Length: 139
View 1 (tube, rainbow, N blue to C red):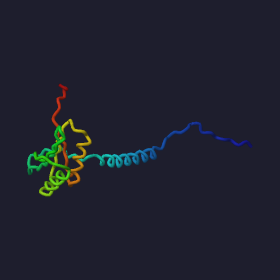
View 2 (cartoon, rainbow, N blue to C red):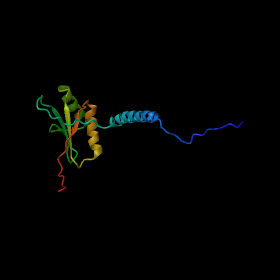
View 3 (cartoon, helix red, strand yellow):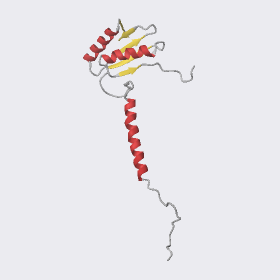
View 4 (tube, helix red, strand yellow):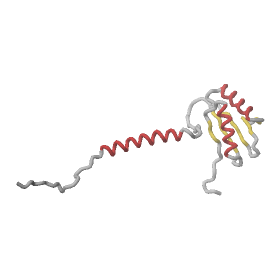
């Protein structure tokens, strides 16, 4: 007797996509978590919010002029220690204090970041950077 063998020449008729969907969802979750961690290393900025009613916000301004002189609320600051002291006092008076850093375009990034570090060491967490509106036409 001869054994008969049957060969299925139709090939693969369907693909199971469940493992593909599982892997895609796992990768999506990994990217979401790592994106949150990467974004957390930046400087937290306090972006302006528009509200029709509410209390007036108290601002603490730190200005760094063209010559590198430092001012807080228009008053000159002698050194980093005085800057930290003034920022801490302002924060003590108002825990919801918002700080605006105004730096000249002529100042280096390192100098501005040093000022930001000094203010943050005093406990200030709500920071914003002031800028003039630029001309979009480049004139």
